[in-house]
Length: 176
Image (cartoon, rainbow, N blue to C red; front, side, top):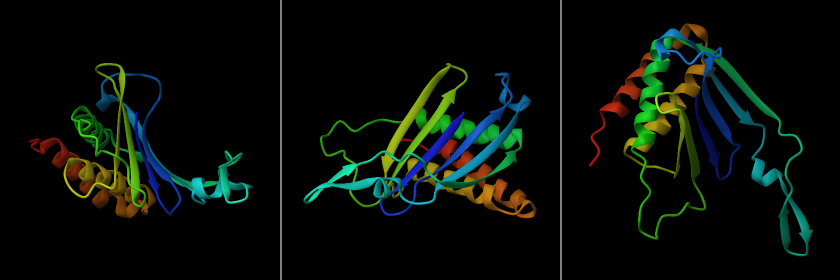
């Protein structure tokens, strides 16, 4: 249903995914949801490089990527707020027209994806190391969801409230 993939320059890649349980595509509030976090054991890019000759490296696709992860149920009302914020942000995605737009060398790449049930189409966005604005807010929401998944069940209600507030702030953001 939606995900964020995080690719740090010098650390292992990780992702957060919100998925609908079951096959029905009824109203969001009528379904159950699962949130899953996965992280590679090592940076996939660096562990996939091999020497291909003098002073030359080549990419060797990994045959097996070891990961760690955790999952948690997510209440339907919280999932609904998060999905709406994710879609709101992705609908506002615009790519700059100037030629200076590029990913950086150091920092972190973020990819966002969501399936829009109302239009039955995928939506995707990409950014490199956002410092402020709505995309940085979406990164923070993704990181807060990871904190929620990793937390002890007793600590989750407070963390879930934080996630819902962050999702509402994204939807309330005034675009200029």
